[in-house]
Structures are given as structure tokens and as C-alpha cells.
Amino acid sequence: MEFNNLATLFQQLWLTDTQYRIFTTIYQYWSKPASTIAKIINQERTNIYKSCEVLTKRGLLGETIKWWVKHFFVPDNTVLQRLIDQQRELLDQSAKLIPLAQAELANIGEWAGQHIPAMRFYEGQTGIEQCFNDLYNDIIQNGYIVIKMFATNTLDKQNISPYAFRDYWAKFLQKLQEKNITLESYLGNGIMMLESLLQTNKISDITDLPAGNSALNCFVFWETVYIIIYKNIPIAWRIRNEEFAQMLHFLLKLNC
Image 1 (cartoon, rainbow, N blue to C red):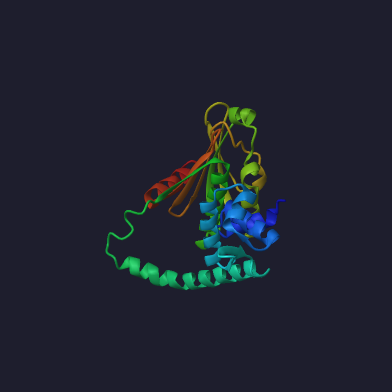
Image 2 (image 1 turned 60 degrees about the horizontal axis):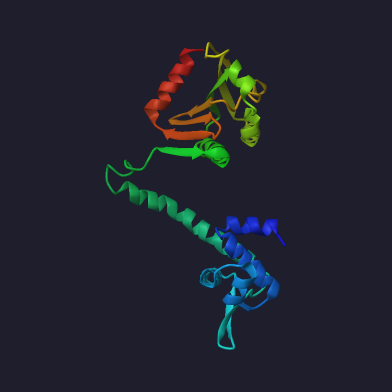
């Protein structure tokens, strides 16, 4: 039997599929040793034992000795809520430490942070979803109310591409509208090649833009640039570089 919500919760708590299966098996059969659990879910006993130990340390399982053999059990039906409460408390404590930790990093020296990459790479459907999540979080955390976007919109990409922007970023666009954030769009139009540049702030002008056949998006705000290319496996980059971003700001302003 599958429990989709429970499985999702385990993933969000950074627990593995095996640990999820162990927990539900023990919950169903009450108290069992690792060897029996291993047979039920058809996995190697040593791995099951190690996973049970992890779940015990996190408070999801208890352990007892029966007939000189260690048995694992679920203490009660509130263990998941207690774990979430503990995670929330730890996150609150961590959030209070961030300003202090950043101050300590700043004191390391003038070179502090220079080796930390200013670029992040994304790949595939889930990667692009994460890219748009990061893009939205960057916008909100820095309080931007206007962002610029360049998008290719040639006729050949429209005819060949099976996807449109809305297939990838409908949620992102909805959240921008809810926050009254303006998307200043620059569309590179043409037949086979880019021939003209059209500036628009209308959402209706961009929802059906192509998202395939190597169509490209470029989002720019302050010193951050996001570039997305919709190939068979879409790819994207986030680049934080003031000079590069300012050049793109200038080029878009110059051409419209």
C-alpha cells in the first residue's frame, strides 16, 4: 500500500525511500527486528539495521530487547509532529545565527568569499523549476519591483517548439502578478534570425512565447542575470556579476 502524502513528508524531512518503507512497515506490524523488516521489504539486513538506527536517533522509532534480539517500534502516532516541531525550532535557532555567521565570514579577510562561485547551473525539467524558484526568491528577498527579460521569439521556434513559456513558468508568473512586480519584456522577433526588438509590459504578449528548439530567456535585475535555453534537455545559469548585468541593462535600453 502506498501513502503518497506520507512519502512526500519523508522526502521533505530529508529521509530516504528505504526509511519511509521501514517506518510504514513497523507501524503496520508494530515491533519487529531488523532481520524481519529486511525480509518484508526485500532489502539487505545490515542496511535496514543502519536505517533503523538513524530513525531511532531522529525520534521516529524506539528500540527494545526481546528474546536477546533488538526490536524496533513506533513509540506513538505523534512522532512525526514532534520531529517537525524539532526541525522548526532548529531552523529558528539557525536563522538567528546567520547575521553573526556572516559577520564572522566578513572578518576572515579582504579576500573572503572571492573563491565562492558567482554562477549556478541548472539542467532538466526539475532544474528549470528550481531556477524559477531561485529567480523569484532573489526578486522578493532584494525587494525588486521591476525586472527585465529578453526572449527570442522567431517564427521557426514558434512553429517547431511543442512547449510555451506557460508550461514552465505559470506559477512564477502568477506570483509576480500577486506581488505587483512588473516584468519589462524585450522580444527578439524575426523569421529565422533576430531582426527586431519589441518592448512590452503586457503579460499576454509573453505567455505563448516558444520554450523549445533552443529558444532563450534572459532575466536581468541589478547585478544578477538568469539565462535559460530550452533545448531537448533545458539548461540555465544564474550569474551574479555587476559588470555583466549592467552591460545587459545598457544594451536593452539602447535598442528600444
